[in-house]
Image (cartoon, rainbow, N blue to C red; front, top):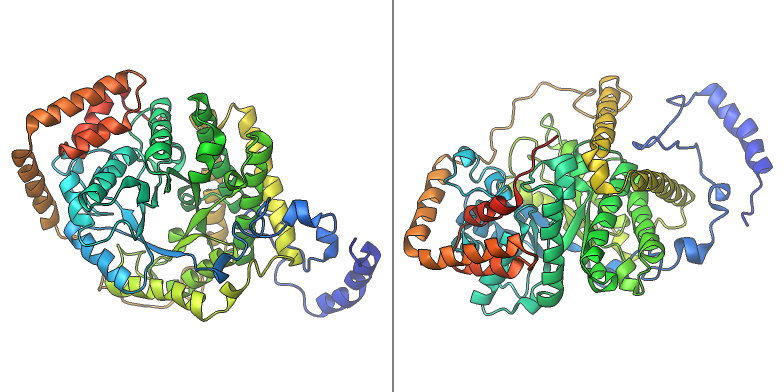
Length: 551
């Protein structure tokens, strides 16, 4: 029970607080988080007095994992410092990866260009002007071999931000590892493989939802049997947050998608405890520091409860929400771009205090273009300073027990659960997306946030206050037009040198599997090894599955 009564709080409010406010009013009539959760002047034991410590908060490493998924967290080892990187060709990106690893980065994260993400080769007409622009261009196994040349795949964990073509890129990764003499059982990493958020926020889908879910569950089954240390999906709230949703919506929509994936897996006969521990999550970290810390704690506890109560998971590992965090790209500004270093540092600190397992810190110049080498180095150093100099990594969940953080954690969990129940009433995440519900909620939140900025209810330094005259940044990374032509020539050489009869044979086998119920991943792996292109494999599946058109 709290050793504070409501009467004592009321006395303080009517005397000490009122006296201060009468002399110097507060800055605003009311304060709230970005999720519109009211922030009191102070939070007290009265805000957390109903909490039962063990079932509601507990110890780190134990259900409900509010305080973290490992008992020691960063006292054992730091989070994985994993900078999302990829641009132009595999050759140039390989050099960036080696640079980052030499600077102390501890994991790789692959950014692919748009044609690769939506299943088109670099010589496809729809790829014109996009090759290598927002990530590395990967057309064939040859590109993947170059991308990981000289990088020991048995020692580095790799995350690949890829969704509709995730199965193809995963197959390429496995095939390259085999060429390095690394067995697939040893590979560690993650493929995003989260197509549902593509329909609601990001847009790089190919197939209709049901057919996409078939590929997702095929990947689950294949990973379970062949690459047991690999995270077969990273359920992502990041892109929905970048599209404008609130912290509460980010938790709710992400976990609703997670529920949909697990239900789809169970429908095809997969046991929940055999796959749940390889499901990872991916969140954004925005500006509101304490709300973000609480968001991560709330997401962890809510997912644990969902796994235990809804899916009847038996293993503790099935109930652990492990997540990667990226600082919020949408908060970066082109104006006074060096301020972004500070924004990113605060967001990264919140992610660490929230217990992230891995972290990408954005670079100061990303409001202009993909980052330069110098900017990436500062971003990585930001993580290293937090890890080694700030002291926050020396204890587990150091903000746990804060009245404000615990109250915010409770409120975010409660509001997120309300959303999940509403989505359940609509028939689940797939139907909610089909009805446009999630998209509308995100759009409405984004509109409100922008209105708050324009009304100066939300100050963005350098944007709507403290503006200065300045010359636009000139030292930015530009992808040269020659990259596209070089990539096309490389692709043509592969097509000329490969066994085209073997390619046709493997693609025919893949088409037959797609038309039936066999797992398509082993067939994709065979096609990849024959140097079938990403576009050829995608087109084979398009013939069977069709293409999705936004309603």
